[in-house]
Image (cartoon, rainbow, N blue to C red; front, side, top):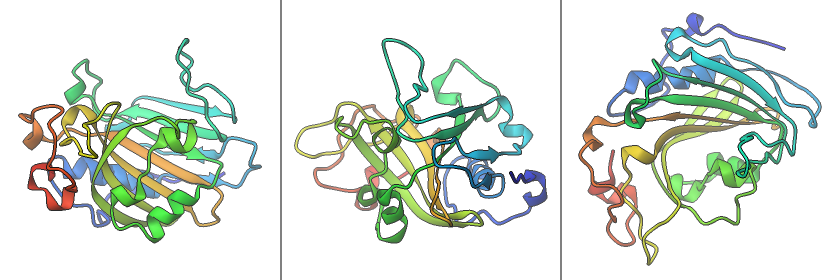
Length: 239
């Protein structure tokens, strides 16, 4: 098993991340994913052997858990979340934990011992987040037949020493407007995500962090975007 030290890379570039409130926090999160993922090749039936050396700002209430295929990671009956592949998860908070969901910043880094063609296609061919259409519950927890309404922004390709990835802002809703329209994303449903495939194409890395954009603070919830539009063409939906 290999490990690495975040502090050695504190002066590294922000890897083309752009924009908005808390740019430095998200750039630090990208570096956490980029430089603190130590992977050792293991049998595909075993949870990945991964080590993260986590900076103090992301070090609140960190837990490390490993799951085998078929394990319930939620463990909260009657609700279940069954993983379809062996997985190791780091979970923590940026800054202090708070009861205010708009100012609470949990993060997770999950490494799956599995390969998904859709994740490869996202990096190789997708033109935006809508075309990539990555949803962790659908890819790894059997929710592929469950209807969700997803909105994406800031789709970017990234290159890490462990592999290649895409990043984006993601909003997910259980119910959506009729006629194929989209909701304007809001802070209650916003995450910054990084999805990648390791170079040996044995693991999928999915990292996510809750986001809050100050310029969205006054946005009305569940507001429809212009029919048929995408984020790139709709000013109302731009971060």
